[in-house]
Length: 201
Image 1 (tube, one colour):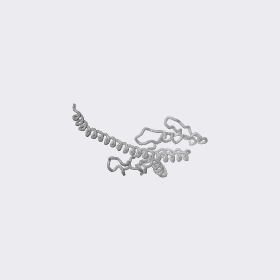
Image 2 (cartoon, rainbow, N blue to C red; image 1 turned 120 degrees about the vertical axis):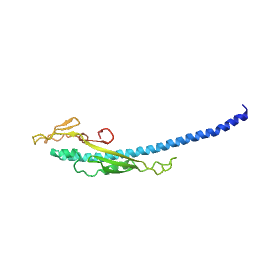
Image 3 (cartoon, one colour; image 1 turned 60 degrees about the horizontal axis):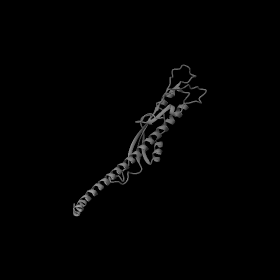
Image 4 (cartoon, rainbow, N blue to C red; image 1 turned 180 degrees about the vertical axis):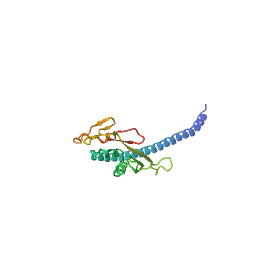
């Protein structure tokens, strides 16, 4: 092969090389843009999950306080465990936790024992090869629910006794004159995301 032929081959290969490198660079930038968007969506979902759980946990604590306050009135227990008692709005807790995750939320009750929030990130996806991402923010939603864990029998004829409380297989024989050993909030109520298995928050 002559030297001229070698130069001709190299000259023909160079544009192909540039095209391949340019394509790979474009692909890398595309993957980076997808990664940016995914990270922003993940941040929004984390904010939504935390906010929904925070609102639900605050409501759970209010229900526990009401149960303790009415512990000597077993007839009131069922309404408390069903959430059918007045509680103050706890969406402020959702907003507080969203702010910790650099997001803002809208929050609303979902039935008697649940909260649904929609979280939007404070920061946009950022500049990328995808047009519009420099101002686009991520939005995700989550619902947290509260479930009573306990059962009891009100059929006792002895008015001086309190019903035995059974929570997930554990029994509490409550004595009106000795109420020092009471269930913890997590014993009385479970709080978890609507699409997640039960947790012990």
